[in-house]
Length: 499
Image 1 (tube, helix red, strand yellow):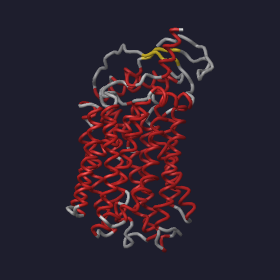
Image 2: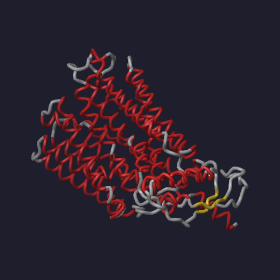
Image 3: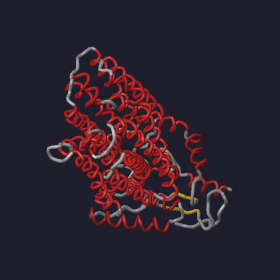
Image 4: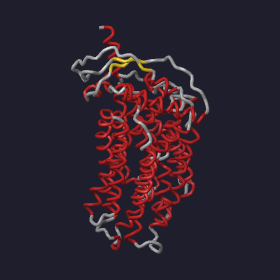
């Protein structure tokens, strides 16, 4: 690595920063898989299990919270209405706020802070004694979870070798449904008043999230800062130290020697990237990729809301399934959401991004259309409808996970966390606001035709997103992040050398 320039230019570069050449990205990408990479996955990726656990638990405890002896003066509709809306709002605000901070101050600092916010807010929710306290900390819980998405996805993609990046992202984002299944099943005994009093069981449900979060925090403290973020922001020596340490750990755990690399990139370091520059990059330089990201997030948000919003009401109103039995059906579709990414993830790195992203979106949309038609003409019961959902979500879950993978890798390094946060906030807002407004009456009417219409709406948007992906998806498989989207700082260096 050689320093070529130490002058600031007044446009985001600070005095004392340099134009450097570094082989850090190539050194990270050529590493063999090791126990160190598993530590990164456990420390960072398992947070999606928390999100799934959190959302499912609240849905399951809502009826218990509305009971007079719950210890909290609140109604079930307030929990599922205002409480859910505040959680969604917190997630959107947290994603954008912490996403901006993550690009500015680093991945590690923020993924420790966001998990801390989640833990504190969840613990405070568990001791709620009045409605306003519950609502406040539902917002703050969402605030922390939303912040996790940008910090975690950017850190994972910048630490995982390029040949494994697709499958790792797909599996990690699909793990949300492990938490959802766990929440659905664990809430059954915990909410049983013959085991725990009515004012204790729901608090224990939230306590489960705190315990899991603390265990993740213990592992996460060993995950280093992204070397890619370090060398761009003027900490090239620390970036070298991190990669040296990782290489040493990989050699010890695998017993393999590491080949030398000569692939370098020239970077003109800068302390910060302005929000205007980030917006110009996303909408001016990469408009096709921005359209792709929006299409993928909106499509999966509508498909999932068509199925999961009013899930219990669909089973109860159409087929008479008791409310205390819907958790078992939910566990089945959650299993489909987990198994799909596990079995399909490898193909995103081998078959390729474009065919897999477009294929999973199109296939899940078409299968949901078939499910809607079968429901409309009376061919389905509770079990067969759930089986159809399982198959649809087997493919849809991998597709939805690929949306996060896409927006994480197709924009420059300096904008990555905020780009993830932006698209996550759009998808979450669409799912949490537009979805309920659109599907509430359709799924609660008790008429199969209305529910089928909800399915058709979600399916059509998923199919449309699949068509967009077939045209605009970027062939990013097994390619370095710097090759998929050249860092803005590298372009600065090119401009400086030609001046």
